Image (cartoon, rainbow over all chains, first blue to last red; front, side, top):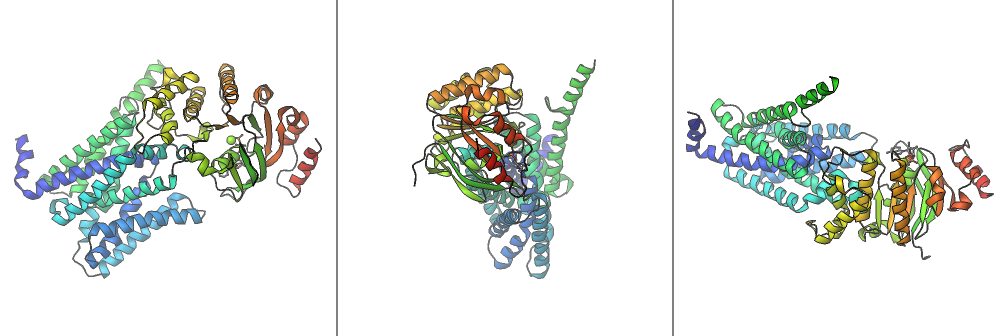
Length: 284
Length: 259
Ligand SMILES: Nc1ncnc2c1ncn2[C@@H]1O[C@H](COP(=O)(O)OP(=O)(O)OP(=O)(O)O)[C@@H](O)[C@H]1O
Ligand SMILES: [Mg+2]
């Protein structure tokens, strides 16, 4: 019975595709999410994901790969955010709020005015069950670049998140690291677009890392836990989405959130229960 | 160009975003092979001066050079180490004490930052020198204030930099540890290192600082400890002279110039 639940959908090619694409996306997002949560860039992730909309519309209108348009606009938005922040007295969260909603709204206007056959609903909520071959290739390329860049620069990026001043003090180029991190953020967003959809990409960029952060004091372990929870959620999410006929992104994110809540309650060191237990111990 | 070793701070002014001048027209020299104490009241600009020297802040005017080099080049050559004031660090970060000290070695490693046996040995030695070997597997936040200070001191040691900047290494540190750190600094100086250290522990200054810089918004005096570190000058630095009013600096300079 249970086995059927897992094996029956596999007779469809689109399900097999959706499963492994989602698993791949889950891994890429989980790796990056560790850096994003530690750096405190969750809002930036939200910004990038919304800012890609006009890029996607323009790309379809011009007939170029959607990933190229999405990447350019996503990365462009982060550069714009950096510029506005440097040159005004506004706090970062206000700048991010202004810039990404501007991009997003512009994208919505474009999508209704530029004649194209893109389905706004699919951009917003993802459509991994109906993903095309071309989209898979773009997803793979963006994801692989991200993984390779992070793998090669992982120690430096971690140092940059932890102590950018020390990175500077030992002569590392922190500007370059800043842009590297933004670059992989934009690429990862592109990777996850088809699976999670714009609205929910940020969950895939933040929740696995946040869950893992509650469960571990070491970065390597945090990375492993993040990838584990993300993979589990992505694979189960695709099945749920198929059986319940619900948007895949939504299923994945619900699972990710459930795992987060479980970690929040049961985490051995930082969980609510263990803190309660400690408090009790001392109040006796 | 004059040949200058040590640190040369040339006419630096720094304004933060809130448009308040934190430091103006600051010029000073840190002589090579000495321990120089940086003394001034809270908000006097000590940390700001450190950050300007390290290039973390872009001063509105002025220049800093280290051994005659622009700061970035000096940093690429691992000439300068910096031990931050404790409030600048995210203590919840998932790294161990060992990891943090190893970060002192990144500048010597290849692009993948894979530690060599020498890197490991130096990390071990640095931890041992500050008496932190027993804590090397602790998460960085699971330390007392004094232990945190020592961990970051170990990172600076591991970096093997000729010049070390320490921002208030003694706050929240017990007498024994302070003594141990001072001994370590003296050893480093005798081995030829140059050290600039800010502290509020005025009592210990004359026991280990060769030179002193007095700072309150600008450099009020600098020179040999016995000449500069006088009650009169200290009263000036910490005392009630107008700080930002017109002519305040001139007024203070006049008084201090008479020393
Ligand atoms: N990030 C900042 N933004 C705005 N103003 C700042 C900032 N950091 C410091 N200041 C201001 O600059 C001045 C100098 O501060 P600084 O931290 O250099 O003092 P300090 O001598 O290190 O003080 P303490 O002994 O308390 O460490 C103060 O008036 C402070 O309020
Ligand atoms: Mg300070």
